[in-house]
Length: 165
Image (cartoon, rainbow, N blue to C red; front, side):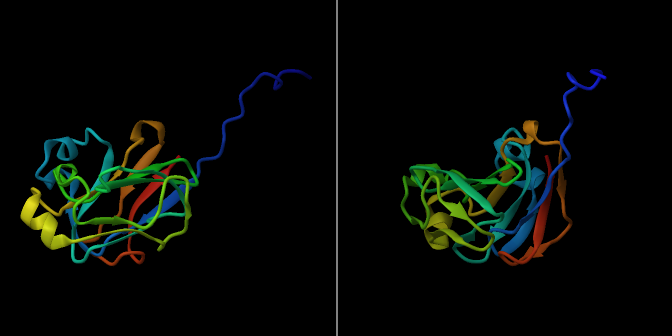
């Protein structure tokens, strides 16, 4: 009668699909010219060599953090996966130059909502690269991250990752 009383019910896995937040060419994370990303120290994911300076929300969720220097943003999906979009490499050193945030911490967003815009020319000139890693920053807290094999993506249209949590 009481045998199931103290059992912890395992929840059903919840899968979300992450769409490309930026239009451009997909770069495997291992090929990103920054060891922090290439060695997946920040988590699993992919990178995009951007074709334009628009960043849209890759999932329905909540903006958890817009970095003060506007070079990166974290959106938490409905399954608690945290998607870090890190615009360019060594862009923190630009201290916000060339970046415009269109959202703030706590905003609720839908796939396709404009998050950020940036000036590619400024990044190409003053930072290491415009390559933009898209990382599941809490990889240790999700069940599985699957890369979807694509080479060119259009923001809001192509799926790039599946995250099961």
